[in-house]
Image (cartoon, rainbow, N blue to C red; front, side):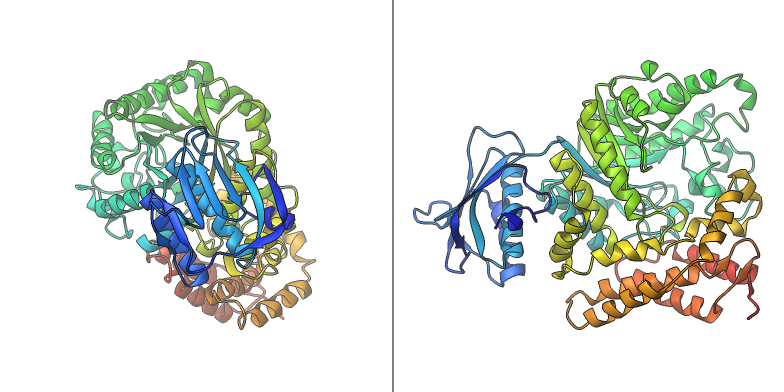
Length: 597
């Protein structure tokens, strides 16, 4: 029975078993709950699990279940008691909802045969958020975004952000978004209302200052780019990441940004706004290079323009959030404003302790882990786990009270949407517990049951991911050989080549057979088919010989794999920029020659 409680995600920190008897929720039970929203969410999920929902009567005197708002608990704390009756107590709607989610997981995990127990639980971090890129390649359908928000709520996140550069229907900027499957104002309003109903704060975020590639390449706005002739080169995923910083000295630059903000800010109920302002790589390195004599001056220019943006946002009643990479790496954090919430990102397995200590001097900050999914068909789970665990340790050590996980779409965002729930759930566990997940295999088994009702499935992903030797990043770089030296990738490519010589696919083939056998037992067939497509893609990627520009495989197989990938992609996402990934596949076929066998 202890194992059942410790299989809850996030795992409760404090619980006790009451006796050895079990409790079952029956269809004739009455739910006493005066909070309509929580009872509605609970009943909808219970119906999905058991095929029935409960009659709700806030005035019932003999209800078997009661959800009660009472004084005395912290804002997200709850107490769940399963004894002769089932009772949840909390002081806020959110706490009550979190208790309901825990009860629902117990129903699921125990097959509706729950242990009698008492759980008193609350999070280690007050602010826990999921950050999702809907700009650089993948645009989920509105329904898919709602499902992600619902999952975030289920795993007890209280904030959610979607990353937008150009994928919003800004009036007057049609040249930027007309072919990108953008979100409309109605979409945002619907998402905001939906998130609010699940007690999730949808925090607005825009990439402004840096990361304005698509905007600053248009005929209408290219003169505002710091980079001279920003549209002179054909599109490529590498350039998208580095050059297109807006010119802060052109008055029209702020006119553009303020217009974007004016259109975007009113759509959200949140009192926060993430202004981005990260990775301004080309600031004063093009048109304005003569204005800067040293990095200190560059940082002053950066802070001055950021303050202008931030003041505009604050004038609209919003608290400013901002990425902290420029503050940490380009200047003295002490001179940057204290009234911002600093989004403190570091995605390596061993994030810098020095930087966490620096940013902790600011009144408000959130550490930001990464899903380790960008450039890959499947996450790098070793990096994901280590990054989440170590950032949590440093945040607790230095008193940082916010914890986010970010899911980026660098270089075309080819990672499978169906896998997003795994890093979401893992980071949720770390953020709630305030500590590393000790047993990774058990976690994957527990999550596998919650996701697909088969605890054997998700642990297989840990082995599949280890075969992902060549990533989409390397394939993009070899298409433009001049970038390889710029990014010092020569040794990395040589190391990849050495790894290719020793690939043994025997274990991967065994996993593939297991997956085929599970198609007859697992209800979510699309999830299994996604994994099979990932395995085919890994084999295809690993067939590219990067040093000789030869392909040790079949281009027909490459094309049929990609066709299947696109079909699966369109089940949950709009076409968006999928055609640009297709262009990469086409260019690889043109660039590489078949190996002689």
